[in-house]
Length: 248
Length: 248
DNA sequence: CGCAGAATTGATACATCTCAAGCTGGGTGG
DNA sequence: CCACCCAGCTTGAGATGTATCAATTCTGCG
Image (cartoon, rainbow over all chains, first blue to last red):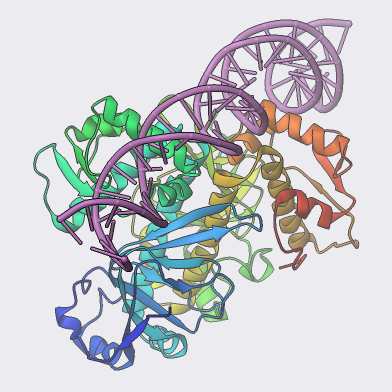
């Protein structure tokens, strides 16, 4: 069942789709060359677990393409998603051996990996990498705190709307199509995964999506393809104050 | 009403209570000297707001003594605490101008501050600081994700128990008294602040504390002083699997 | 002493969960 | 090519945990 592959054919960093967003974004060409020497690719199929919580983790890496999730699970099975990893996001923690979370590929996934030791050594003498990693970590911390507000204080309907705005925004920033108000995108998550993200049950997720559809806030083509006729309306539903920056 | 003071008398870094835990922990003595030149102290009274969300923030700093909270507020007043700042914790984000959160002193508070520009410059040429800040940020991110599980999936009783374990642990790691199973500490938060931390109402917090008292999980002397006769029992109530590391 | 902020307790309302039944659509084997 | 199957999803009815509204009771302090 383990269909993970280590891809050996080398891809040039210069042609890499996440060249300017990932942990290597600030690297000069000579630094990139050294990274190129120690990097390797791994691919995973949709549904595969990349790392188990508690497992020893001897590598770090960036998502090149596809989507993965970070989840925590309690003994009795309750699970909470704590992170959604999109292309350019970083996985792993320099200076720690085990993973604190399960990392699961929700779509087919390609990662650009480094064994931890060489990466740490590289980081120690390459401030560009350390600084970029700090910046990315601070962004993730902000996102996590934003999410704490969603989890702690928003209603089910607001939670769904919040998730939709986030996916819509991320999608827009990747694909650069902001067709004036009307946005279209695919949900990369099952209802159950959305529930785990939002601290809800999948039934409640389904009901609230139906409700938003009934109220004309969104429309669906199939179960995953979403159209948002009026983004500011969606923002209102999410309880977000600012209608600010479509492409923040 | 603004009773904040800038304390001018200089305190030696060598004698600083957070010397070995704060962002400066890894600094050599020459680096410390340069930090000493640009640092200044500010104190705040209990209840005072240190920074308003959205405000321009021209400094960063560390909590030297006292406790502060990081909170987010929605238009309609719903509030979620997203961070609890104890001595040695860092406030502010290099590379960003405004604060995303309200920072409020819940007790009298002393902070060791740096104007942002000089600090950023210092950071750029002092890897010890940048690395320590990365490490601290990663720790905060882990804590935030842990908290997402609490907010999203735990019951009110488990939330209270979780908060108590966290406070107990932090208190123990500061004061180094682990009198074999029986732990004693003060709650640094009002019921309302606890509610804001846990995504509950203050009434529910009060009820669950009463329930834990009734069930012998904790006992109270006054409203703030807590005794935990059996810490592992409290951990069970929190829904945490491991009874692991009292002083992790 | 008496006031004010903090906390407790009670009664009821309501949002979300739980349990259960059906639906839908895409893939597979006969 | 059709029938079936199954994961993913939707919808319903009832149970339950927490919020809400309201009334007291503490506790420290001027």
